[in-house]
Image 1 (cartoon, rainbow, N blue to C red):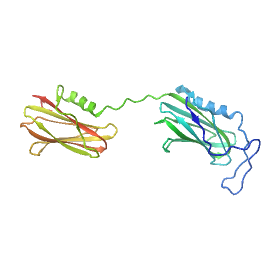
Image 2: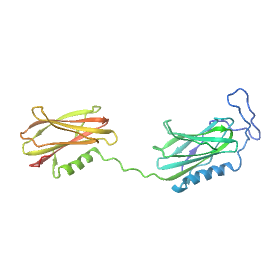
Image 3: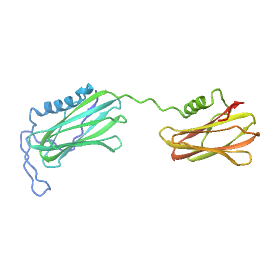
Image 4: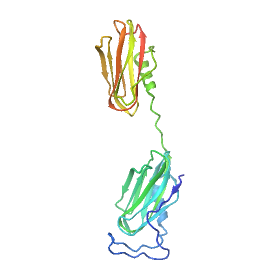
Length: 283
């Protein structure tokens, strides 16, 4: 399922020997056997499989192994994960491990999740936001000895639909507020790195106009729209609680009008469409 690469953070024990305690090095070190208990890998697999069973989990990669000679001893591995699955990590320590914990960092080095267990068993779930090499750490909080981690990948993530484009949001607003209205210009786009932009448009008497703005979904939180007449008198304005805003006006006299879109909260790109409905009713 996933290509699990292992990067050891601690040296493995010399074959067939015991590692004795060293004095004067912080936590007291303990003797640890050269090989882990025969049951340890199977227990780690059982733990991860049981935690992922309700989500049809499938085994991903080989068992990861480590050991700690003292309290707070840890081992790190690099695991390559995709962004199409969620993952369950089941970690188990041998009988001399009292508390075990799991941690994971994304490819940018930002910690994404952790599970600090009060027992020798820890289960952690994680759904990557992007694929790539992640840093996984097993840590013995209390005790010492060998530990193992098994990984299961659960069913594919239900990807949310992509956000509607600004143009689509504007067209949806226009079809609802002014059915049959015709867009008079290409979309007006806000100035880069500016939270407000002014434009001008000629409006004709006997027509009704809708000025509809939309900001980038997830970036622009609140948008407002303003309209001034040919004498630079403010005609109308609106403050929206979302990333779309609309004002409408039916001018009594033709002239050059100024309109403005302003990002009140958030930041990002924004556009405005101007729609004309000849002989239309007042917005």
